[in-house]
Length: 236
Image 1 (tube, helix red, strand yellow):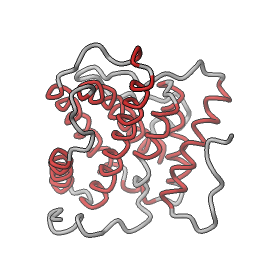
Image 2 (tube, one colour; image 1 turned 90 degrees about the vertical axis):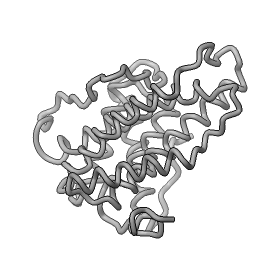
Image 3 (tube, helix red, strand yellow; image 1 turned 120 degrees about the vertical axis):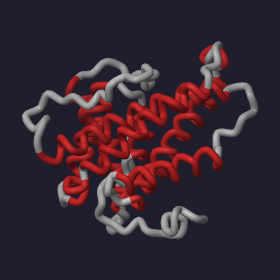
Image 4 (tube, helix red, strand yellow; image 1 turned 180 degrees about the horizontal axis):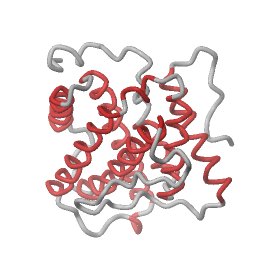
């Protein structure tokens, strides 16, 4: 069965990005003969973003601007494993509207300070949050079906959130620094290639690959993201 269903004519750009990322990631893994994919590794506190690339356009052009967004998005997704483990068996819901609002308010303010578009930044982070929850739900389903694979230790959620906040800062900066590349007509294929390389290099499993595609679907700045909740200081 193919990883993605055919894209209907006139499909939204966000759907195109998601399909392109997943398809490109699958192709990258198959073409390189990469070993079996594994879950995203838990990030080390204060670890540097894994945005390296050995291709000829590593330091110039749209790829160089978009690759850090894909790499930081994967790094942020790795924290979902820790959040899932912290919540496992506690009855704590995966959805946390209060925390999500705090994150969106904070990144919007930081975007303004950097002279970036707060609406676009918030749109990207909404996707980041939903992608994180895709991983959490997937892991909880996996652990429910096979308790032997469930975590036996519980990470400190406050420490995990400090790591998430660190990654958020890097991601807001990467969004701010990549405006020309994100507005370019080539953004979708370049972002898909960058994301595929991250999937290959980090050996992401299917769950984290699908979540990465969800995380970056609003990165390309080629449609209006203004909507209630994104204007007037993010007031609902």
